Image 1 (cartoon, rainbow, N blue to C red):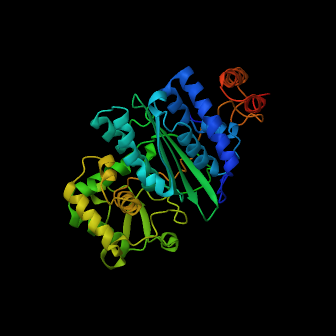
Image 2 (cartoon, rainbow, N blue to C red):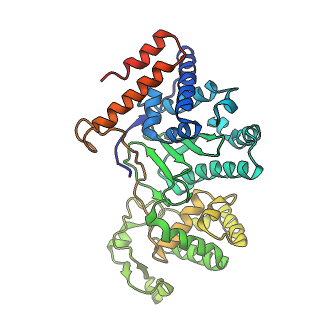
Image 3 (tube, helix red, strand yellow):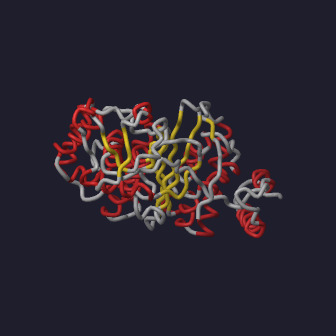
Length: 398
């Protein structure tokens, strides 16, 4: 079960010093070897998917815990640490920051071949990587632009994603974690955790509360293209994005059946809406656009309508379908057909041991002690110099 919490990461515009990165690689290599030897490659990948464990690993390797650079530098250091030993260790790390993230599919294909995985399995890993990136850029519209994507997988096909987005306006970063066991459904609450300050408003189409909106969105593109465009034009014709209209009573709530939700009453131009009495027009993220002005969006909707995807995941996977397409369909589904989407921030992460101020719960001392004992055991087995080993052990002293 997830526990909610806050962890603010500031954007780090600097570079990691060469001397520090070299040591992170060295220590990361030895720690990876020992952890994999003790627990296996699948467990290593699983721990990478745990946002708190990942954060702790970055701190042990001496990077600032509250800087965005921990994500990018730690994944880069681990990737460099196991270079040439991937097959022996049974784990593979693909992608990275910026343009390097675009090489993820190519690297998955390369490493998959070296691991002697079937082409079907390689294709599945590539698909999972691509969908994780697309979900966090299109379905989770939280104001953070994805700029880092790292894909971990084991010889057995267990995989994890660590990707990060930036909000330049607030100068903060948000990290998204995925794990194969948690992502059986790629479009309904698939995250192992999202670590961020958790105070943003946006469209969250991955929430279970958005399932009906997903269903209606899919039905919209399965039906008539002309009907869909009429719906979008109707919403654009009547400016529901203005709160004053709502206050004047132009927009009213109704229990009208879905097939008769929209009614234009003569010249009064009154639009009857379903279940919108609690809609926040100040922060509603999809009510501020005229989608009929986008020729590209109309083109994408036409192409999607020709394909007629079987489900929402297939809809999202189609080329060209991005945030604007998702918003247009969500708006139509909610306002005209009454399928309300979620606008609750999905940022959340698991606490490893609790907090000293009983937030979110008291410190779990037995688990805490076991973690210390395990880390000491691992550190003592490392084949590194005495000084580096002492630095790691010192971090584990209560």
